[in-house]
Image (cartoon, rainbow, N blue to C red):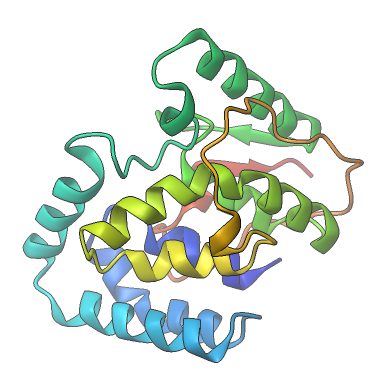
Length: 208
């Protein structure tokens, strides 16, 4: 289990009381991750911001950032395909990939919901998770760009995600590509929960 990816997935969820209660565990996961010290420091600042900001204010900021308009939508394929047929095809391919790896999804979110995708990666073997993250980076980049432009505190999270990929800032291109690669499956672990249910594990389950 990649606890670093798990922590990043949690930090992109709609903030609630359980998530705030679990912030110390999430911070520990960040500390033990393979992120650079610079990225860790940015995440510590963001986590402290979440801890010290009233929940109602956090929730308002989250909705205005991710749910109003589509520039920073957490649905990956929306940024390149919008509501086109290509997006539907891309989501079917991603859902099939989940199923091939023995996952069942119990959620109202679409398969391309970024926290769900990170939860999925966190349970895969290193090489497969890295290959899939690298291929998804071009879909994550538009979200990061939007958050950087708006100076959103959540930019620390998307910046950390992209730093784990092979994509460099100079290489970010908004290309149309509706397929994530299908690679040979490695072993994967059961999902871990930080504290209670305030994380994507409640919607993505590994079949044993």
